[in-house]
Each structure stands twice: as structure tokens, then as C-alpha cells.
Amino acid sequence: MTDTTAKIAAHYTEILGLLGENVQREGLRDTPMRAAKAMQFLTRGYSQSLDEIVNNAIFESESDEMVIVQDIELYSMCEHHLLPFIGKVHVAYLPSGKVLGLSKIARITDMFARRMQIQETMTKQIAEAVMQVTNAKGVAVVVEAKHLCMMMRGVEKQNSVMTTSVMLGYFRKSQATRNEFLKLIRR
Image (cartoon, rainbow, N blue to C red; front, side, top):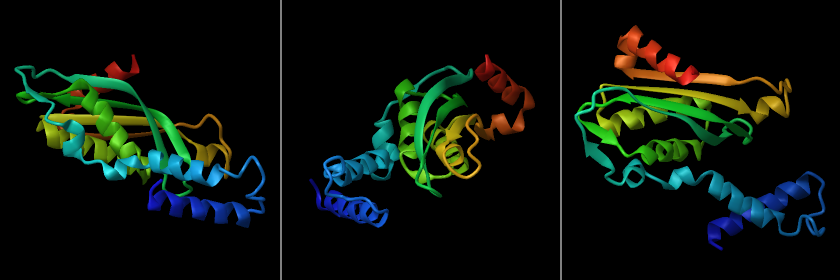
């Protein structure tokens, strides 16, 4: 156990006590430590870098056709309420002499998802990162997610889905390119 983990656990103990819980009861005795470890796992994106994630998995390629990775599972934390939002990400890019290792798009998604932010910011971060590492002619990202902060509290709308998109390069400039991408991810 690290010093940071112990400090986070101590804060969880305090929060549980302030909520009126008996932190010594059997069911909660180890909860602060479990919660601290879980929070560190859920926010591990802060300790990752784009270079580390990509790990030189960029390959020369003559392909200049659209590459799409869709339905990438997404688990993130809303910065406003510290509650999860869960969904899927669709990423496309137009190569310009280089392609990115397939798993790296999912890893880039996870790196930004495992931070606290709003969905709009995360969508932009994923698009800009893919553009940066591939030097693509264009990048498109669509994120569809359900937010527990809207489902469990506040308006309590169980079936609402938030969709965000970022279009860079040719996806922004060309309506036909954008439409092809959107048609392909909608099946």
C-alpha cells in the first residue's frame, strides 16, 4: 500500500463517518481501502502518457482509405459529481502514410476515459491524440454515453444518452467523408 492510497482511504473513512455510517461495522471496515484502490484504478489515466500508450506502434502504410474502430467500451468519471458515465466510442482516421496499431486506439480512449472530465473534453482529447500520433489527413470521434449523474440523481432519466463528436481535417472539411463515417458507424 502506498502513502497516497492510505491518504485516500483515510479521506473515505472520514466521508463515510460524515454521512452517518459506522465505519467500524463489518461491511464497511475495509471499504475505505477498497474504495481508495478502486478510485486509483478508475483514474489511472493521469499516470499514463500518449508516448507510453502508443509505444512506437505506428507503421508505414500505403493505405489512404478510412480506418474505423467502433464500439470501444468506455468507462469514465464525471468531474462534476464523481459518478461514472458508460458508453462506447467510435474512432476513424484517414491515414497519410502511417497507420496506428489497432489496440492503440482503444488504449488512447482508455487513457483519457480514466480521468475525471466532461464527455465533450474527452471526445476532443481522443481525436487530437489520434491526429497527433498518426499525422492523419483527418480524424473523427463519436462518443455515446449514459451518465449516472443524470440517471441516479437530479432528473433521474434512465434512458438518456449523450452523444458528442469531434471532426478534424477532412472529416470537418468534407461533408461526404463525414457522412461516410457516420453511415458506417450506424450500421
